[in-house]
Image (cartoon, rainbow, N blue to C red; front, side, top):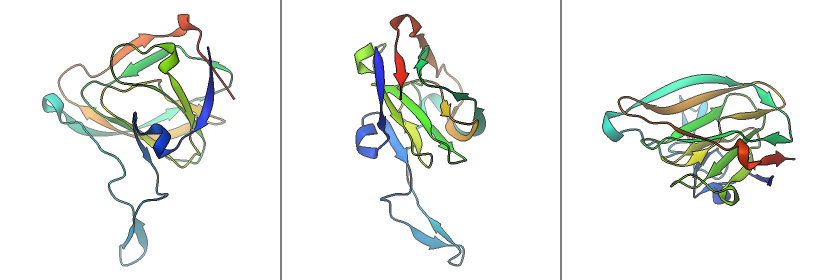
Amino acid sequence: MNLRLAPLTAAAFASYGDVIETAGHDHYPINAGMAERYSDLAKIDVGAEGGRPLISLCQAKPVRLPLRLRLMERHPLSSQAFIPLSTGPFLVVVAPAGPAPRSEDIRAFISNGRQGVNYRAGTWHHPLLALDQATDFLIVDRGGPGTNCDEIPIEERGIVISA
């Protein structure tokens, strides 16, 4: 199966979570007018079973297309947000929450390099896929008790992302 990349838009991504971007959102001045604040850009959900918010950093190594997908994961107890700290594009591969996704339910998006994503609790997604260059990300997710990561291999399905 060959997945085509679609632009990452709030409307196209709505059933999987939030696109984190300033475009189209209200803002207001803060810090004596020296900055503009864009608030409430994602619905962070980390409180299940005594969870607490975590803020982490990671660096994703770049991949090249075409790319064979190998793994999908989900976080049943929380949302998980990835916000790029540079302007390089990255890929977002998702499938609806629920049982293991079928190949035909997997979608692939490409960010414009200034967008982040927040996966809803239980949404299947591929681990980070940076393009062109190593990319640093701010991660907002859940810490605490309970198992909050399910993984399934998908390489035997032969799903490939192409440009």
